[in-house]
Length: 337
Image (cartoon, rainbow, N blue to C red; front, side, top):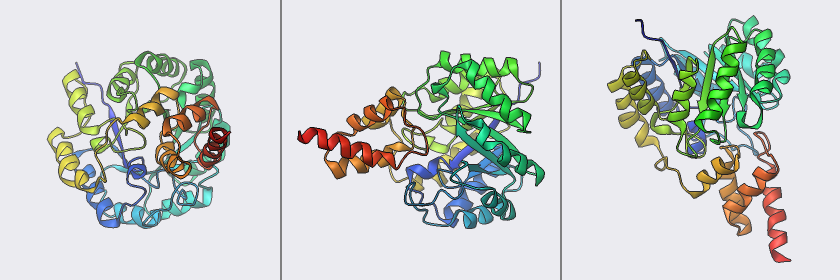
């Protein structure tokens, strides 16, 4: 029986940007991108952690302009599709055009799980200029399978090549993933992808659950580098998928070498599940909030766990990073009373 193909989408140079405070250099990016391309990764995602044009006061400034990084990576990526993330309201159609001119071949347009309609124009534009376009639904734990299907159909109807479901908080359990991916699989006639965070230690298990329910695009990063406790660890995922009999098209020894010899020396710290990142998953808070929360806790002399629980109770979502300081300030005032 022919093995089912699983496309590996490596987001080390995008989600991993959060974990290094957006400090990737041209030399680092070209080394990682070239390594990933040579070992058979299907898509290589590169941008600021919050997408193209994310470099800002709110989200953190990039050490090197992302357009320069994209242009440099495009010179060494020969087989994979060089991909960018775009969050409407942060990035614009003009930013997408510039990314395309600098070598990007695909875009994943990311919205909150209930707000797919704000991405219609971006997906249509991407298709009109010859790019692969993906509808990316963030914070998927915050919506029912039925609601997710409704939102995914908005993406599908405007031309998305596939739908990517993101457990942005690392909050979901395998059964949560199964329910959502199976609902999409039964309702759509385009492929489904899945993006996981490891805040509860379940990213590989959740990714396998997605595959077993029909997902064919799975996000991962070398060494698990990413926001919060990181993403699904690429070399581990490929090993598990190989053992299960799936075809990733990725050279297993090769991806191990990229992770150990190229990526690991760049990392500022090991990617582990510490107390704060565990709390992200437990409270269902957006993973990229972690470093912002650390800074707010230090500024106002608070326990970062208290801030994260409060953010979760308020249903904060990606794009509201600027509110973290406000929440911390309010908590600090209460402690003084």
